[in-house]
Length: 287
Image (cartoon, rainbow, N blue to C red; front, side):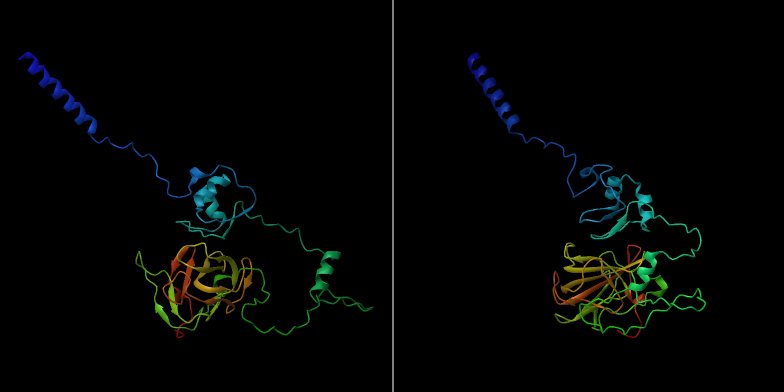
């Protein structure tokens, strides 16, 4: 009888052991999930120089960390406000701008100034008569004809916000308007056919031309001054390159359907990094 009881106890012990081993163990706790580049992927004080071009995945915080600069100071250098929106290809200053102080007007013209003046079409007036201090005026030159994809020489200086002279990027019909909803349209969508011209809405500099931003296809971003940029998405062909200067109305691309369900132009205006309604700036009555 004792042997029978012993066998029952032994079998029960084995079964309990097997059940315990079969129990599902809790997975090891996850302390960090990788969600893309962050300050943990970069070394501090690893950026040198006065400027830096934003790469895909960069944030102002990661750039400030690598440049060993406080993020608010870096934002002040570049006239950025929260939430500090930046984009690939954008040029950021890593140091404060240095303004030169003039010591007063100079009375003697250096050879370099004379050479520069002659290259710009100025003529020196040589005469035995009394020489005045007035500068000679450049000869008038006929304005070159505008051609698609050819950007005219432009003064490399960002215009004041009041002097931008906004124009519609296309004469085609608006098929989707701007929305302030969280998931709404952050610009205007225009209908069109493949190859329709896309025009610069204002004078400025090309700070991005490519297709690295997912969902925008072939994209162009123009910087008009420290306050305003415009974006032109889903193009078929880009007719300009980064760092070029354009005038309002210049043809910068041909309409297409890259990363879009149909041929269209998606157009955005951003004020200090924030999307705003383009209709508040474009001429009324044209659309």
